[in-house]
Amino acid sequence: MSDTTQESGPVLGWEEWVSLSDLSLPAIKAKIDTGAKTTALHAVAIEPFGTDRNPQVRFIMHPNPADPTVEVVCSAKIIDRRNVTSSNGVSELRYVIRVNISIGGRSWPIDVSLTNRENMSYRMLLGRSAIPEDFNVRPGVSFQQPVLNYDVYRKKQGRKSIPKRPLRIGILTQSPNNYSNTRMIEAAESRGHVIDCIYTSRCYMAINAHKPDVHYDGKPLPRYDAIIPRIGTSLTFYGMAVVRQFEAMGVYCLNNAAPIGASRDKLLAHQVLSSHGLGMPTTAFAKSSQDTKEILDLVGGAPVVVKLLESTQGKGVVLADNRNAASAIVDAFRGLNAHFLVQEFVKEANGSDLRCFVVDGKVVGAMMRTAAEGDFRSNVHQGGSVKKVRLTKEERRASIRAAKILKLNVAGVDILRSSTGPKILEVNSSPGLEGIERATGKDIAGEIINCIETNVRTVFRTGKK
Image (cartoon, rainbow, N blue to C red; front, side, top):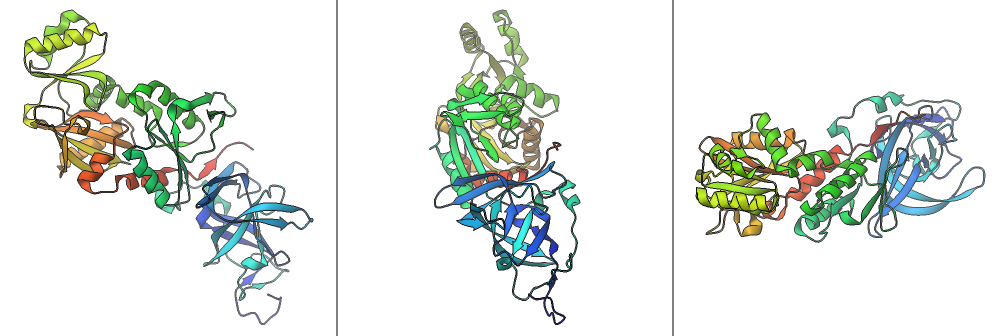
């Protein structure tokens, strides 16, 4: 690495542009220092996470010293923690990660220590141990390799251009050990992510303009890259508040609070979907008991289905075979001061419906659910059976549109096959995975984690100098 005229390998000046694509850092101006053995990278808000078996570190990088409004969230596997002595003689215990560096079209792995270099002119110092032996360093010149530009951080990133990095993911749930959560944990960990289950009811919030937080068991929760809301119906109101708080903190939420609320409010969901021209069973809703006859007439008379607005898993859903039974059920629900819908009964569905599982704008799996003998409810939790089904183009299009209209990234869209085409029964914002995975044999949990990997932001423009 001497300054001679007999150089046979690539030449490096005392400063060069480098790229660390593993960390979503396509352009960094680095100081080349053969007097230093180790390589250092600027990092703030350094936070270790994960387990002893899978240690990770998350940090924030400001690649352009002249523009602190651009920050990149980075994470990587920890390979070591070492005492590093800086040029001024100060010793510091630093996390060490391994990443690929690219200079002038050539790439190789290097070990990098993380430290705060905000007072340094260069966000990266490249030490001699990271420089291949065939490279020649010439201290008297600079930028011997292609020049890059910080403007790359100002350009909108395409989904395919964002490298996958270890993520810290939280599941909001009251049942951490159920099938759906267990499968998503398996899928996330198999991809190198760290995933925690958070009891929704144990969260509490610090609501302010400067530093919104979610607290849990006496302390603020760590920074999560993504949150998966799996909120039970009994906690819808409180769970939505927790999700909104994570949104305010800039965390990617698989489904946001407002779409969750819209899907849980069956009346609102029906009104919104019908206004976009989607096929649905004829539905009536009223409050006054004197309207019972008119309500039944609006949906075409008995048989009818009467369902509570907050019904789930088939509970609170009743089939009335004749007008007298329908009137009695409607009056009984009113006596409980409960909100409910009355819908036409689609006979040609023969006790079956379709569950279309939509993730990130595409149907990733579909099954037919058939009611147990003597029942009309096809829900698996009510004893119904499931099997894989092939959707028509119309059914696929309807389910994707329903999820898009309600702004849900993940949705279980329930559809009836009728003589007039697909009719949407319901859109579920927390669909279970057990039935759909067993019926289709597909890795639906993996599709959900892939959606998170694709949509979590890495480069932020804060606007604060």
